[in-house]
Image 1 (tube, rainbow, N blue to C red):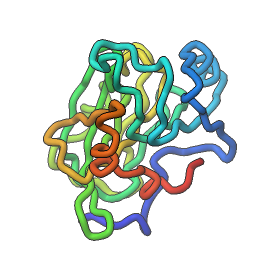
Image 2: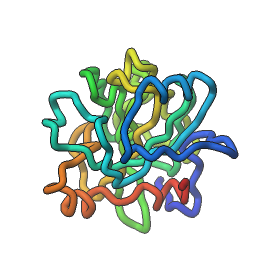
Image 3: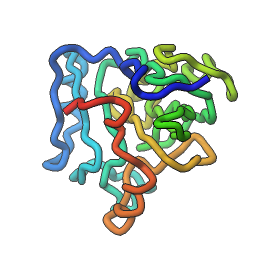
Image 4: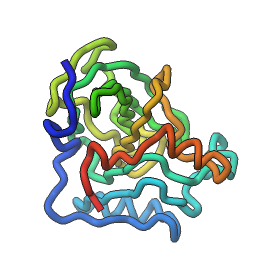
Length: 198
């Protein structure tokens, strides 16, 4: 049984005070890692054109418009299903710059299916669930992975929505300028489920 956003649960235990990163001006992984190591939490914006962040080969020096919302937080923090959903796909994308542990859930939103990707989880998060398993809103999906297991990123959740079934535990987390208009139609603003975080 699935539900709509009116009955949603926070995807993470955000503190009352957190930063909102502006990554359009540049990306400093050392500074972000130090911030998180000191207990900091932050949000990364949807549809933000990010400078100097995506250098791994799969980004082809072209893809830099972010299609999800990031929640930067200490490794090990739990991630919850914001809505009831079905475990659709799971994979460990361990390559440099990729998602690490990744889970896609199918939710129902406004009477229609919507697919949510939860990226940068610890690989052992994948052993907690089974494909086809039903989850209630508020159930733990997994925990944030550290840099050694999440594609070498400072710990964070990448949360992305798709109106189309991605067919696998993957979605393009960033797109190029020429892909942006089409991507905005397929990957809606995650704030429709997460609420106004910034």
